[in-house]
Length: 308
Ligand SMILES: Nc1ncnc2c1ncn2[C@@H]1O[C@H](COP(=O)(O)OP(=O)(O)OP(=O)(O)O)[C@@H](O)[C@H]1O
Ligand SMILES: [Mg+2]
Image (cartoon, rainbow, N blue to C red; front, side, top):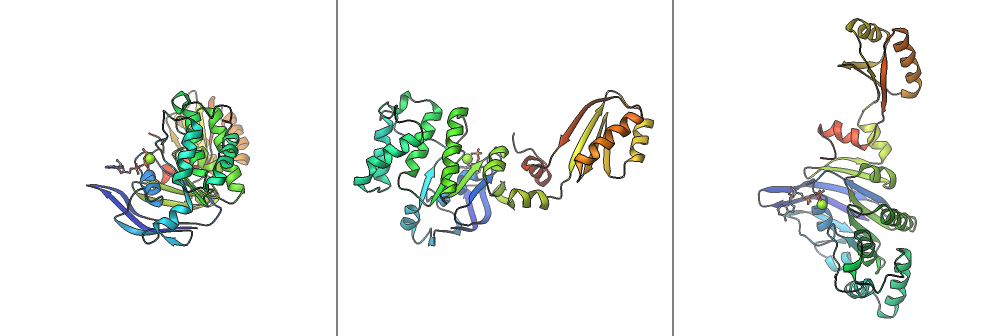
């Protein structure tokens, strides 16, 4: 449904995209995960025809973005990072406006608006001005406006940032519904929990490059990162630490009073490790299990945290 090849975009001296390529099959929920400044918005802006790349090609629904921008536009809906709504107009009038922009057939527009308002739980507030809406409600209308023309592809740029939990849950419910209906969703976020929960394909982007891509399971495997147990002791002598070390057959390291033990079978090793520490009279103060997740994958790929 979407094929991106070698996108490059520079803003003056800054290289925002440094040769981005990926492919998204129809109906997939694709997550573009990356820290601030990684190039997520630049990618979405190019894919949704808001911005032109310096070089590279994009195909959407079989059309070349450069040659057939209008055909591409017909197939896509965009939820930009900054909410684009008229504050002085009501939610209903905003939706009428966007319906016009997206060429929704006039005869159908009112029915679609009423369906979509009910989907987002805002039927009763539809005639209130947007300026009287909370951030989460504005975001719901903003997403609704991108769906009125029933696009095959929906681009969403960090739609849950600064949104209250109730609105966020509602947004996720709608996204899951769209996903079930077979809409292709491209979703940027710097929340790894969102990417892990919803996306069936994830691209990790950093400094304008896709540094890893695949399903969550594939990413976990390809990173070659092991789960670990961190056992912290109230106090431990070098002698006891050495003893514990000689009994461990897996990979481990001591840093200060903490033993980090790496393994692919954390669950079965945990009990043994605790018994071993007790046998050596080591006084455990804390045990932490570090599972492999997108955060640890990102850390191992870049040496830094996903969040600043
Ligand atoms: N209009 C612009 N002029 C100059 N530099 C820009 C402009 N827009 C983005 N950049 C730079 O391009 C790089 C990528 O920015 P982009 O907005 O695509 O990142 P992002 O992943 O969306 O970040 P965030 O999570 O903060 O939204 C950054 O270094 C940014 O400072
Ligand atoms: Mg952005």
